[in-house]
Structures are given as structure tokens and as C-alpha cells.
Length: 455
Image (tube, rainbow, N blue to C red; front, top):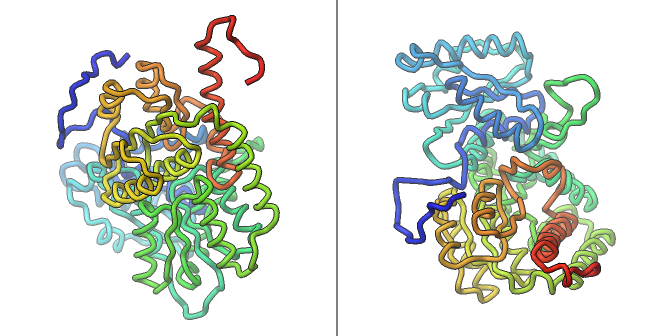
């Protein structure tokens, strides 16, 4: 498997092999699913939305409802305005959502459909809403699509009434439902009044109760998105994914923001907790969180001999990669290769800053990279561990390197989306996965006479 990957690295600009990302509409659909009673709408062909739904369903093991303009040859040549008008009318009548979130595709963008103008000619039922975002598939990544759709909701709905609501807006970025639940648990413990936007918990981890519900109870309410303009400030997690929505809300409603890293790792979680304590005004960190932090530190000390000084390659979405990189440095591991498929100079600068803090110099960092190049680097100088998405499993098999699956998408494992990697509890789980993969490797590779029961 991947035996033909050459060792010689050649600089490429126009070609991506085994890309470390997927397209914008996937992110737009996931953002829209974080709004209560929202139907994502893909302005393109049925094939496009089938792919987007498939990727999300395979990762979350949940249905991802979404509809399409169903472009045919005629719409592809003459424009899809007619399809969009008919499609929106049908969706409101048949599926009865409270809001439809339209995103474009590479096909509709290439045709040049002016979605904003088309929408103005659509009669929206009373009490219903229509928003849109431009998400060309051939630009950026699913990270771009996610924050572009967030901006679409803010631009259409958020408003400042002049009456503060006393709440803090939390923009969590792209996280699994398990992470979102953990973020809300920490905020609740600290007594913070907040609006989380978007919030896929309760939607993409909805329980099976015997009856299918197209619109589960989870998700940010439309009224809450409107009320974002009355919030005291925004606490945004992940500087790569949350920056644009912060700027959009500030431009429209003058709401200030504070951007911090994903709370992955001790220091990053400390910063989230301290910011939450400060904004809630409770004064001190709750004892239960001090205990969780202490448990994490205790486990790090207990297990450090199994991973200390190990070299690791990390890949995936930029904010997730930076958070994981911070944590492995705290564990005493050495990041050897750090890449993301999303373009962003901010990623390169932030990674360099973190590495400088720990005095790590021999680490390759690259945004807008692909897994083929990562494999070439590994063939020239190997690592002890891979941390990233399922798409790295061929490299792991070819080079006999253990893989810890983190990020999006993880297509070949179950339950992961319910388990957090953020917060102190999330770090404990991440620590468990990293440690145990080394212990499993040791048991698997050693001779029978060296097999130990206690490690």
C-alpha cells in the first residue's frame, strides 16, 4: 500500500495528492446543522449534496439531512435561478423547516448565479427565514465553508436592539458534539450566561428513541442568533475558523471579541477556564475544575515514560492541529511534521510561535499541504506516531506507524464524536489514546519472553 510514493520531494503548486481537507459546502452543511430546525440547501447538483451528506454521515454515524437544487444539463448552462425558487418553495411545504440555509457549489459559482438577487424574488412564508453563503468548492476548504455559513447567519439575522442581554457569545468552531457538550459543561460550572453558535450537540448525536425526528431538540435557536448582536462580547475558540464570524458580528453589531486557541491541552484549557471565570465574574476557579486539572497532571506524570521524546506527525484542520501540537509538547513529545490542508499564514506563524516557546527547531510546518508530501517526509525520516484523520491510515500501514485518530473526518471508528478532546477531561482521553497506542505497539512487537502483564 502506497509503495509507489517516491522519496524525492518535488515542490508542487497546482496539484494536491491525498488532500488534507475537503470542500467548502461540507463545512457549510455542518454549520447549518447546528441551527435548530434548519434545513441545509445545496445550490448545485444532487451528486454534490450526496457527497457532502455522505462524508458527514460516515463521520458522525448519524443522518445529515440536506436538500439540493438538483441541477441538470439545462440549469448548468442557463443558470439555476428557477431551480432555486422552486426548490425553496417545495422545501418549506414538504419538510417544514423554520429556516433554510443555502450554500453554493463550484457549479453554481462557475455559472455565476447571484443568490442574493434570486432570494429577493422568493416569497418566504411568515415566520420563516432564508439565509445564504457563497461556498465555491474549488477555493479554500471545509473550514472556509463553515465560517462563511456562520457569517451568512450573522449577516442576515443578528441585530443590535440597544438592549444588552448580559450574555457572552461562544463561537466554538468546528467541533464534535462531544466537545461542544464539554465546552458547555465547563461554561455552566463557571456560571457563565452564554449563547453558543452554532451548536450541533443534540443534533448530530441525537438519541435513538424509536421515532425519527428530522429536527432534533439541539441546535442554536433563531432567536438566539438574532440576539448575538446584544451580547457583551464573543469568546471565540480557534483563531483560524472563528475570526471571520467575529469580524462580521463586530461590523454589524459592534460586539467585541476575544479569540483564544481550542482548549486542547493544559495551557489552552487553562486559558479557556480563566476567560470563562473572568467573564462570569465568579472570582475563583471552581474546585471541581481544579480537581480535574490535577487528575490530568497526575496521569501525565504517571505515564510520561511511555511517550516522552517520541516524534510525532500531526495533520488535519488548523485549529485542531495547533491544539494537539500544544498538548504533545506539554507531554514531552517532539512534533516532527505539522501540516494542514487549509491555507493560512496565521497557521504557520502560530505554529512557529508555539514551537519557539518549547525550543523545538527541527519541525516542518506547512499549511495548504497534502498527505502525499507528509508521506514523503516520513519516508525520508520516520516518526513514532501519527495523529490525525482517517485519511492517514494508509501511511500508518505502509510505514508501520501507530495512528491516533483525531479531527475530521474519522470514518473508520465509532463513538469518537461523543468523546471530547477539549477541556481537562478531553485531555485525559487524548492522553489515554496516545499512551495506549504505544503500549499496544509494545505488546504486539515484543517477543513472547518479553511480554509483560504490568506496564
